Amino acid sequence: MTLVLLVRHGLTAGTGTVLTGRTPGIPLDDRGREQAAALAARLAAVPLDAIVTSPLERCRQTADAIAAARNSHPVAVHTDERVAEVKYGDWTGKPLKRLARDPMWPAVQTHPSAVRFPGADGESMPDVQHRAVGAVRDWNARLGAKAVYLICSHGDVIKSVVADSLGLHLDLFQRIQIDPCSLTVIRYTPLRPFLMRMNDTGGTVSSLVRPAGGRQKRADAGTSSRPGARTRLGDGDAVIGGGAGG
Image (cartoon, rainbow, N blue to C red; front, side):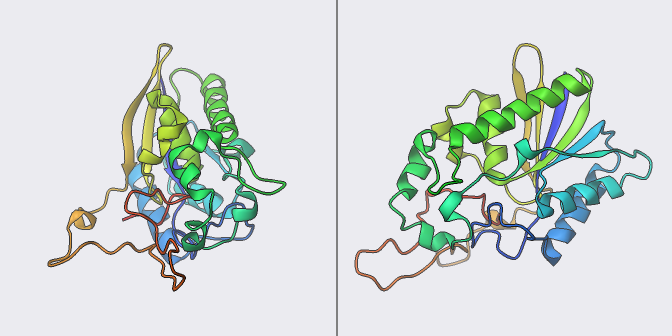
């Protein structure tokens, strides 16, 4: 029964406002480094057989922080392109509030299995899920049935793996929330996977409390003066790329 710990990277300067995608050279910011250090401390006593990471800097920094905290349980860090960020194509680097007005946005929200992101290097969501789940299955076989290991990846990639573990159609994966530096745990057995924990940040419940006298303000809301324009992310919209968390 292989135990897989899925960790999303910590916060960067653009998390939740810009779709960073595979833009190179985007490190963790001060908040992200603090998140990575806190998660590393939480996991320091958990024996790991390997750490697998996306090659992007924000994931490598998160994975390295987790590895560095393991003085009594040293572990090797491996890079795997298959758990890298989605290739968002022409959407890469654009503000999310602008993308929310793109004609393709509703399809990404409700029918992602039919979506291929625009541009020559744009990737389809089924391809993302196929490569990510394939990587998990390959590492499961490589490390063995008694292994416990960690994969550091990205919000939409982890959501696709969680959807697969639950037997959910990919069109339902936007119902899953994966916050920065959150911990998700899946146990794989010969019969089926079991989702043991999801989106665990070990934090407070303050984000669940609405401010007195009004609605919670969405941190990712934008404004526009164009008549009839979609001016903000809807309350039911998933933030592409995963968002900045509560």
